[in-house]
Amino acid sequence: MTGRMGFGHGPMDVPGEPPRMGTQRSSQHVNCLLRKSELGKVKAITTALPPDDFAYGISRARDQEGAREVTFKWVTHKPNPDAKPGPDFKAMNSLAVHKCVSFCSS
Image 1 (cartoon, rainbow, N blue to C red):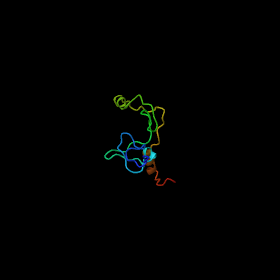
Image 2 (cartoon, helix red, strand yellow):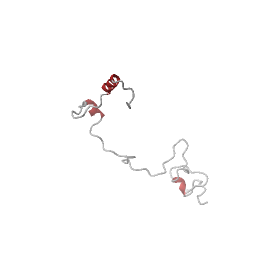
Image 3 (cartoon, rainbow, N blue to C red):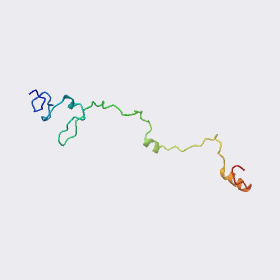
Image 4 (cartoon, helix red, strand yellow):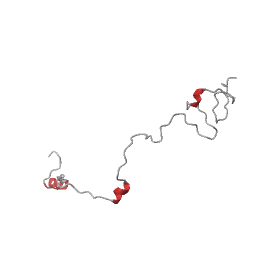
């Protein structure tokens, strides 16, 4: 026997795992579809994971002001004194009624 049958004494057996029956392939340890899990345990990871400081997605710098600082130091809105006021729709509607205008085109 060359150990390809996996009877526990061949070169394909994984140290620390119980011997497996059947055909053993070298790709079984890196292919997630061929990887067997031990009964009652999750499958082992077959891919190389990035380091612990790796960030998935966009990594942004932390804002100096957090939620606590924003809520404890509340700043009220100050309107712009140079801003022009918008149209007064109430006054336009009352003038339209007084002048008997009922359609936009008239």
